[in-house]
Length: 194
Image (cartoon, rainbow, N blue to C red; front, side, top):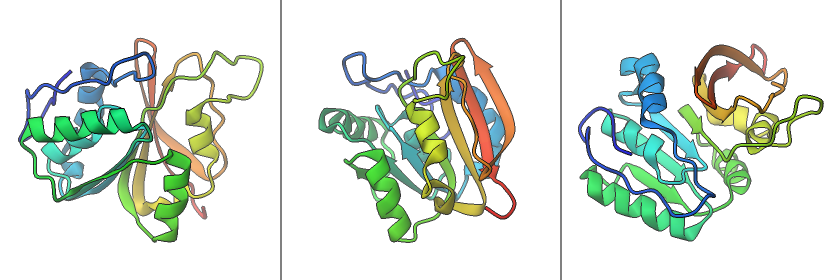
């Protein structure tokens, strides 16, 4: 796995050991950032379920102004710190919060933080054709603090398994979907009046 564009393009990234981390594939990252283009330059970015930090570091490499990454597992956070060093990217605009994502959402909202982009590619949920999803991706969509963390023109980029059927609450409007293998990436904005 590597950085696919920007200042640190081509730099390799480590992935935490074990099955708990499923890094976003390079081809999926490239597809996401091809869609975003230069909009990432100067943006404030939040990466949830950071794992290896790949999405947030990609943003920093491509010119994001600030990145906040949230990862609750200390050993995974240690790998993220190693990856930041290995890329040669500046440490000052990168904030790593070692805490549960849903705790972080509430605290960031209390601190009145706002982001242009929120990236989340959490662990995949189970297949759920005949019931509402119980996955972390669905929990993010349902979380009351998440819409308030986006700037008015902000974008949520949310990954999930193609077998995990999500239900978007009325607070969200889907603007694009990318599919690659078992991964589905949804681009969502806040619905009018949300």
